[in-house]
Image 1 (cartoon, rainbow, N blue to C red):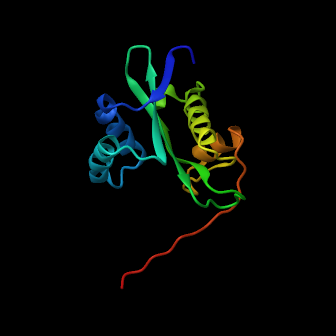
Image 2: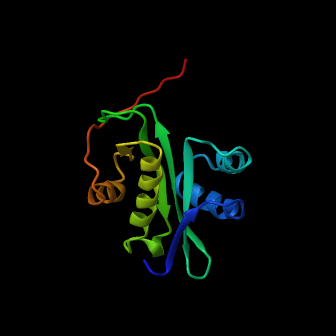
Length: 149
């Protein structure tokens, strides 16, 4: 990880963060610009974002971390929560995601959290492998439903 720098997101990272969020969550690209702008305009006390930057200054990944009052399978509150983590394909499997995760865990620990949780789409096996390799244990699977009224 010597060519990688993990640091808190700064306003100058907004465009890169939006680009990476859109790659992770493409179903709602219109949500990302106002959410990132709001993060910098009124920084939340219960959430943060870490940026992965390579030696040439290019932002190649991010991890959004927050605190939740409850997370499935956890016994304490609040719980640190990995809301999202993403790395460009060329920077995967090099330990970069672990660096982002460790930064998020340290942030949660510094706020009194004794547990850390996350989730993934059930069909995202790559994410599942990452979580298991990072020390998470699967605690529950759910299927969500909706209908028009």
